[in-house]
Image 1 (cartoon, rainbow, N blue to C red):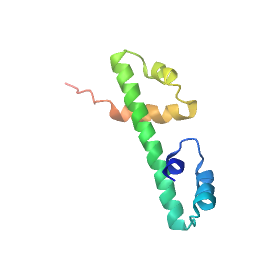
Image 2: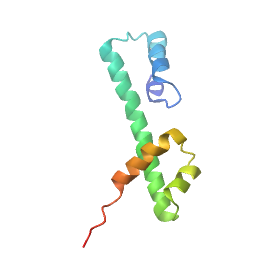
Image 3: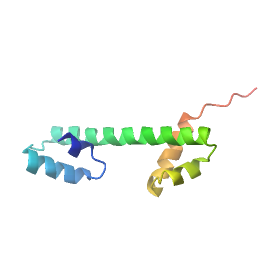
Image 4: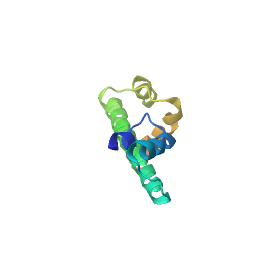
Length: 96
């Protein structure tokens, strides 16, 4: 059941159908909300790992953010999100 909930390939609606049909889990509003939280948790983990890879590549290989995303084959629709996450991670430059 966890492999269904944590799968990146299965869409949330399909996950709901699988939980109902294969595991006989009634999808109440509470269960639906909890299933969505699990889906979001797995995506959050993927996002944090990807950001860590990009940061390591930028530092260790001296690649640009864009080059790292190309090498990692980050989908275009996620690049803006990762760019924003990277901006939050960069240390502030102190002004003297």
